[in-house]
Length: 280
Ligand SMILES: Nc1ncnc2c1ncn2[C@@H]1O[C@H](COP(=O)(O)OP(=O)(O)OP(=O)(O)O)[C@@H](O)[C@H]1O
Ligand SMILES: [Mg+2]
Image (tube, rainbow, N blue to C red; front, side, top):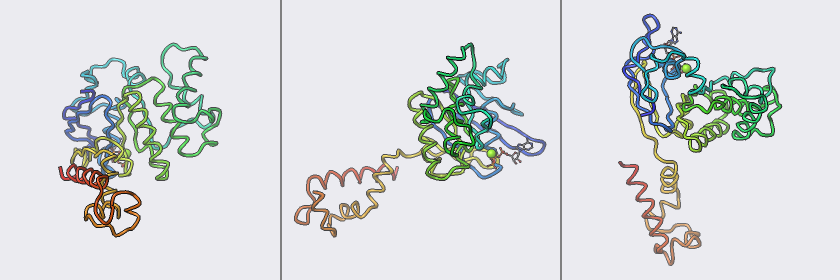
């Protein structure tokens, strides 16, 4: 297991922000965290990223307890990338310079520049490297923030409402970008979000309530969701009822002379399989 917590708890005076949380997250998993305001999402992320220390309990990354790490700053800069709701870019630096800031390790100026350009290209901003944050759109600024989070090739990226300030289309683009990085690099992502459409792009959703895990939900694959949508469409309904009310069903080749063709039967069986998955 890549990341686990054991009875992780954080109190602020008499407020129990995080209470007895036991998590298990695999390497390369893409997890989202949802929950009402004040349910402890941000606090949990700060504990997982060693930005704060728990009141009790422990976080283990690759089996190592965070409490045992001597140089926490070094650990964080090497292992964890952060993305926040407000991109936190420095306004008087351009995209390239913003991405270069957290670079860790002995690198020449040329190497830094090359690495920053490579990451900005990865997030689709190869044409915007000399733009200041004020010359970028909200979505572009978040892309720079994602590139910056990746500079040290972290094993873990923690994002706190990274799409909170974006419209729904741009939000999905940012989350798709994170998923691309997750797939290509195997980076583990934990993303806090209020947006169910964003949360659904993860493999697993963890719901927090009053600092504890209320429930966890595996997200169905997008392909299965697509087939279920097809089942609920006019097209799917005619197949299921084996009755073509739309003459174009014949043109599509799924009906002939009012009865299902072989192709129609094949599509129907896929729809039925998706339905069976949904019932599980
Ligand atoms: N530094 C702090 N001092 C005192 N109380 C705090 C502190 N940080 C958080 N809290 C309290 O802990 C609880 C959890 O806060 P947290 O910020 O983790 O919630 P959240 O789920 O991220 O909420 P939101 O969706 O509004 O961002 C809240 O009741 C909050 O008031
Ligand atoms: Mg928060």
